[in-house]
Image (cartoon, rainbow, N blue to C red; front, side, top):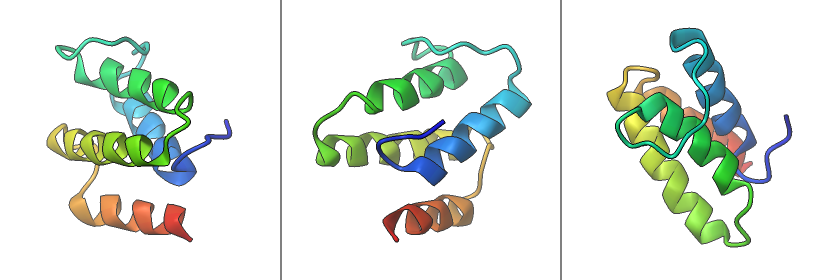
Length: 84
């Protein structure tokens, strides 16, 4: 899938959620963080504001790290790859 914002980062987050939480579907549910992250990936693509997308990706990366889906180094490297 092609993403409007943060292609590499969103692709990675979706892939690790699919691997670690199979059958998770996107939903706006803060009690189900993997589902919420998938929902945020989709919702972010509707934004016309790059600044808002940037704030969302920061929040998403922090929660992906909390879930143990990625390290902080991976997070930084992904953002750098999207910034090129």
